[in-house]
Image (cartoon, rainbow, N blue to C red; front, side, top):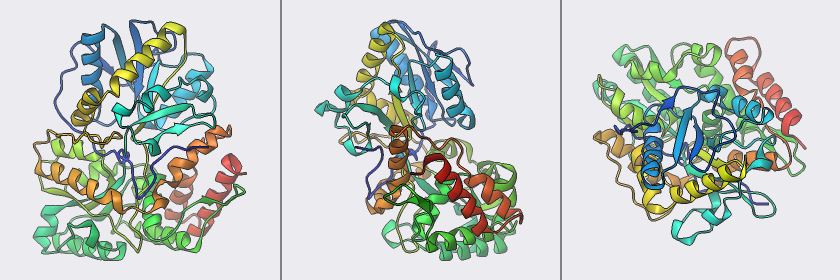
Length: 440
């Protein structure tokens, strides 16, 4: 069985896989409307009208608006984009499947067994040699049916307030082949915080993916299944997670992000935080939104492993809702992945492409954003194979009729950070949650 994901040396550009990075290019979508969320985008499009669900941060939607506008001009097919908040997206898709009201096309974060049987086979697009799609990133079932093609690839990444580092006189690496360890980075960030008087050394997305990346870099496997499908954690993972929980002391890191959902990106953009552990998809937004200080993407730490958590920036799928809509969806996706059109998507949204040989010319005016893209491209070949584990595992679970409906990582570690339980107990509960939902 072929699984989805980024084979690594790795990491998919979105973080994405890593995606990487959305472009905040100002692009007019013409008459197309991108709604904040939508309840009426359901199944039953026509040969001339389709619904396309996405979930993106500001800036990353620009490419989708551009390509659907171009497609309407060229093919006469209207495509309604519905941008759904990430936190509710998988639930909305699940409910839509139960109500027989799926969209015609979607860029999804993961497959779901409740609707995977309704997916259009994208094999003809994936196997078209002129598209040069990286076969390692496809989601396939055991028969060879291509269930999804990434919109892009993404990875986790480290951002710093460059102005604060310079003010404090603290150096930082620029070459991923000569990067720092997490220990060295935290020491440097703490020094910058103390010298400049800002509030925190680091903010860190409340994300299992970002935590996995850090654990991988510290030599752990995080919650990992053996050949029988039973999950456990290794000693390196326990050490890394205990270290992470200890950082949440309201000095090195604010407790409020992982305990009550405070916005780490807003904290970083305020200028009162030294660094931010997030991913390439932030680049587009930062290129446009950060004006009060200089920022930079810097090499991710290796202690001792060079790694990330590689994901598809989005897994593009088509749903077999009815004959006319299914044919129209297939035609649109075939058109989308033609290199000339796909290149427009990557350039406009700032995606790291799943197709080789494109060499997108990203229209960032920001030198920091251009440098970030260059850095991510340098880092990808250095990532250890563990980087693609979770992305691959998700597809295997779906093909077995299972899914991780609720990753207990955020809840359990939030309790540990609050002092309600130990980090080791949190890991025990996380492992139990994985075994219950997707074990065996």
